[in-house]
View (cartoon, helix red, strand yellow):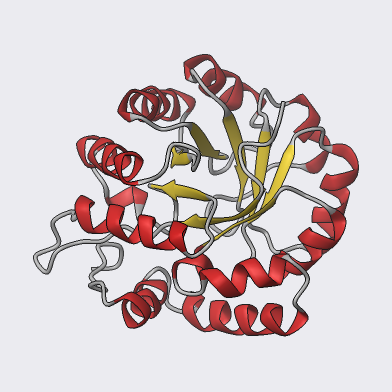
Length: 254
């Protein structure tokens, strides 16, 4: 089967009104603007999108609004990871019902072998399921040797570990995307599906150029991402606000 998408996808920020209420229309509008600038997939309700601060109803509203704002050939990916398989399966069912084309499930915290977790999520998925390795957000993540045994069609790896990425290319049969803006050029060089990065909120063109082999763009993207990530997720919100005029209101940490 072809990859869900190739190229650069965005781990979309979620926009809020000044009072902290969800602004789904503004978020959908931002997604459409990013697609016009070269983004080929939009991840909503992910780590960067402050999913932990969204209610189930808000997640559904967000997915529906973003799906309606984008061309049909641009997939909407929904984050559905949770501390337990039961919770992740419920998020997954709701995400597909709201219009998501695929889901991304972060591995559960404190679980060394997440195979049972992903098996449960896969049973609830009515479309493509991608695994998410991000030990910085949910330790310990997913061991490389377990990847071929997971019932998933792809993997997002946000560890930023280049050696691990190359190991995944060697052993993982599914599609692979990096979540690390600093590895876009490497991903392009070794022929993986692409990147799914927060930096594409603020510098989509530079991310596309970096994946295409532009070394100078890769250095600039890495610098911008490094600066924004110091204060997560507020740093990405501020950088996106400076570029596109959106509000930098956050819930996480507020």
